[in-house]
Image (cartoon, rainbow, N blue to C red; front, side):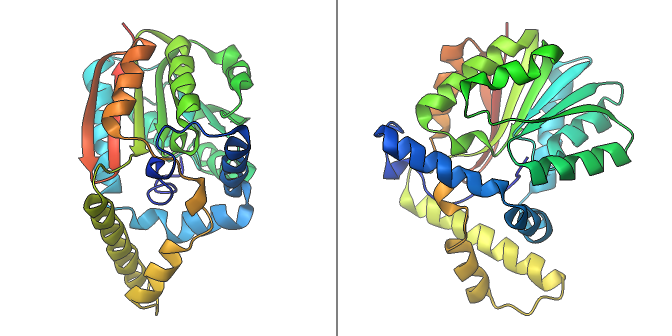
Amino acid sequence: MRLGAGLFGLSSRNCPDGHGPISWHNRMAEKAHVWQSEELAKLFLEDVRGAIPLAAEQIDVLLRVVRAVLPKVERFLDLGCGDGILGRAVLGEYPAASGVFLDFSEPMIEAAKKTVAAEGRRAAFVVQDFGLKSWVDAVSAHVPFDLVVSGLAIHHQPHGRKQEIYGDIFRLLKPGALFLNLEHVESRAAWAHEAFDNLFVDSLWAYHKQRSGGKTRAEIAQEYYYRRDKQANILAPLDLQCQWLEASGFVDVDCFFKLFEAALFGGRKP
């Protein structure tokens, strides 16, 4: 999970329906691959993730939803896992579970391997791009899942592909199983988008000062607005994504946490 990796940047207001020419899709796919960079992965894990506003609370809510729906978790998938922060939280709650950690970034998968292995957990690690329709074949040996979690990864896909991924996830789940997406969503108003940006910059600045950094807030803001991954974000409104989940067959679809553009939402397979 690149928790916070997409909490800003290019939104769907730049391409309202998410469906542009094929060349536009290709350009966005190329920009998303910036996350395969070892340099960017290291920068995010060391300098950004700890500054995400209410990150611990978001994970706490996610686990509370899982506990409310699932008496036990035997197998789960962490889709777009980054260094595995969500999957590790699930394993902490359900230590007998086995997890599949999937990401297209080898540096992130290597980070996940180190942290999960250090905790002695049962897990499989898959380097795969879920932007490709063949991604489901890479996890076919582990299905069906009791739980699929995803953290700020699916928003890198064009809107049509997002809908296809939600359908893929639905088919990978057991009856009664759960999908939860901790995601960066589009604000309906420009002022809300700006408010979220300001919150994130304030949080980055506070985190930087706590670590004895010497940068000013203006310098932090400059880095934030001109970071390398910005163009990889393709945001969609929360209510629209909930409609996509329902269209895929999910029930009990709801938003369980929202802080401006950070939202936890999902549903259950009947």
